[in-house]
Length: 88
Image (cartoon, rainbow, N blue to C red; front, side, top):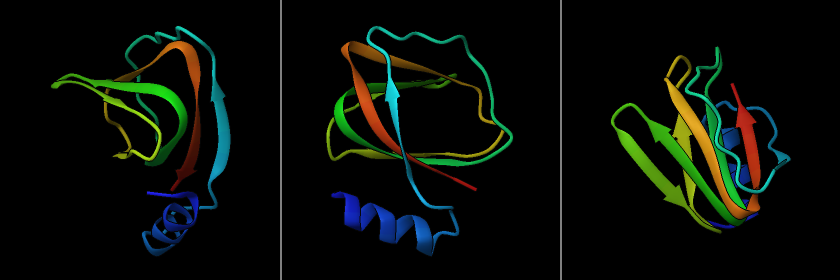
């Protein structure tokens, strides 16, 4: 998925405008939740989303969605990751 397709999809699903977020290299957060849903598109690097059911690694052009209240951790590779994030 490219940025334009992502922006269109987040608007259709009721998310706010996507913002660029730079994740630092070798990030490995503790498991946590958010009180909002997130839709994310990886622009560069590798971004891993670990849930209680397992972990999935995303690369450029890959996207994911995380419902509010979902326990998860965020991880990045040695070069970090640039991600477009939209919340609702």
